[in-house]
Length: 139
Image 1 (cartoon, rainbow, N blue to C red):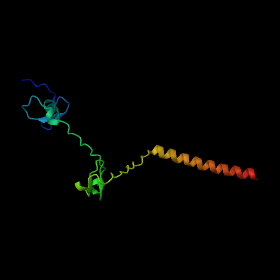
Image 2 (cartoon, rainbow, N blue to C red; image 1 turned 30 degrees about the horizontal axis):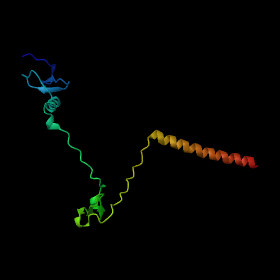
Image 3 (cartoon, rainbow, N blue to C red; image 1 turned 135 degrees about the horizontal axis):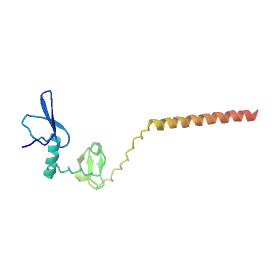
């Protein structure tokens, strides 16, 4: 068999190039090489059932931390005390009102900060100029 891939020898170690361009150290009798990444890619394309995407978790409609609340009533009327369902109280209480989460403040870039600072300085100078002009007019 004839070798089809480029190779080189460095410090007594023989290296051959994979189809993707990566060099792998090989033995003296090797005539072909495939790297681990290419092997994985081939395996995944041949056996798609091995790498099926995991199903995403479905939301229950309950807020985060509901099981830590002293009392929580979901929209179906189920009553929970510290996360444990109380079937005998089902439908006796109105659903717990959920407060919306506050979104974190948006981070500003350096440029935006500098522009805001410049704008503030201009306003201060404008007010100072107006005060000086008013004093001159009064005299």
